[in-house]
Length: 89
Image 1 (cartoon, one colour):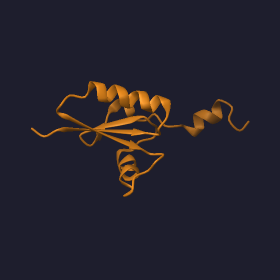
Image 2 (cartoon, rainbow, N blue to C red):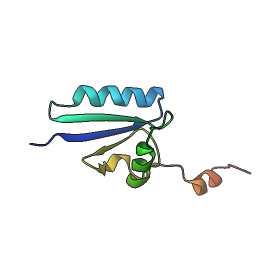
Image 3 (cartoon, rainbow, N blue to C red):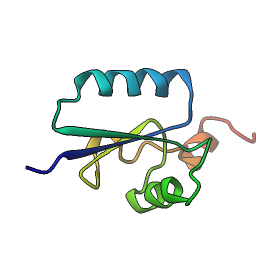
């Protein structure tokens, strides 16, 4: 049986670090956990390319076996909502 690939995208912040810790604690021997710190970048641009491919809008975010997990979708900043809340006024 192939290992399940767990990809964690972070920005190296406190919230991200806690998420990485929890995921590593929950991972089973059949899970391969790979952490991409988008602030540090990757030598091959792999982390940025994957973040774009998965449609990541905020971090921390997790993809399992090449698919962004539902809880990590559509969480990015919405400029229109910020404007309605008073940004720029």
